[in-house]
Image 1 (cartoon, rainbow, N blue to C red):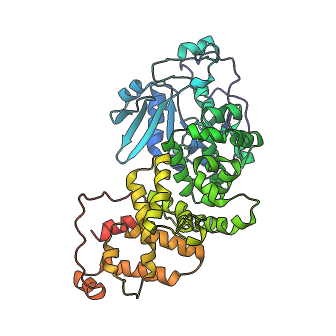
Image 2 (cartoon, rainbow, N blue to C red):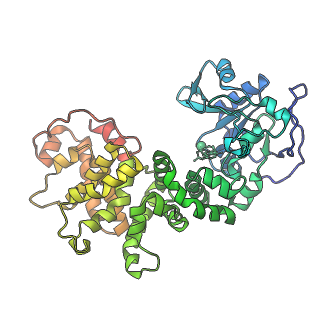
Length: 475
Ligand code: ATP
Ligand code: MG
């Protein structure tokens, strides 16, 4: 990363509206020379240029600036601006205002959307006694518009309300400078993840940041700064009060990150796993219980297998993620030897339901995903029925769950390190089923009665590579 540090220089064109007086020091600015022009998203650049031409401040912000500075390809390019949603909307015919609480503007270029947000201040930065938003100066106060749902702010406030210093950098692409109010440049160079402001306060006000910290630390290979880590541990119990869908979304992101193994080890070490996925934490047992280690190891191997596949481009569906997480617990519950005096286990489908139902309720997992997770766990035994009397591949191959059941089987085989021949047999069989003419399918797999028609067709699932292949080929 470019390191030549300059004192704040006024890179703004003369004649622009003067910025309000501020009590705090100006941002550190460094030239963005290390970022190749070609790495920038052209549509996002168009949005920033237009806004600036119209006299507004506008920057690329957040994750894209972080990723550009460390040479990673950003997932998306977000714009932050002083222009209010209505003003943005007036400037772009292709703009849509979205959101109820926080209004955002989507500037739409065909399939591609540039998310454009007005600078916001952190409402929790208010003085607690007064309960009002405290602006840095009287001048800045004039710049604020407080509406019922939006607390607009300055660029600096917008940087400071963000979660981690490395996520709080602003890039002015027209003047090719990075603005840093929060120490993000130093932390990027040190590979350090640190909250902006007091970590205890920032983690307490939004405990989902604990999960985000784990996501960024493992994805970027960054070290979590000590006080930030202590705040994560101290605030982990508060995750119980965070909105379940946000928590679930972050857990799924960790599973799809390619660093699920490291992320889950950190979840456990921080105490967050005990709060967000208590059954899994319990299954892994106490670290000083030697008897628990072998079963914990089988869980870690599954995550390792998942990471390997994700590195090859696999995107696990929600049902596969859930099935993978709870597979070991279900197997253990279904094993008469481990029922601990609770009598003979009911059948596998019932056990799977018993394990997954409470989880689905707690995490508000969509019913459709829980039901599918339950079925693909149950279907695993079919993969080993090759050559037996009950081997009826056609019905199984035709089932809409097959691609995800096969994904789960592959992960199990990879975790165990054996059974590849079985997996490859099924993979090839499925390929032939999808690509061969009906007579060839009938000749190879026999003709079985059509499955009873389902009451409604299900939409193809997003995220399952096998699912996409199936819907492209078989339907
Ligand atoms: P990714 O590459 O995964 O998209 P990102 O940094 O862009 O990472 P997003 O979740 O897309 O993360 O959020 C965009 C930006 O919004 C973040 O970089 C951060 O500045 C800010 N942000 C997101 N979530 C929070 C939060 N819970 N608290 C404070 N700031 C947040
Ligand atoms: Mg992002």
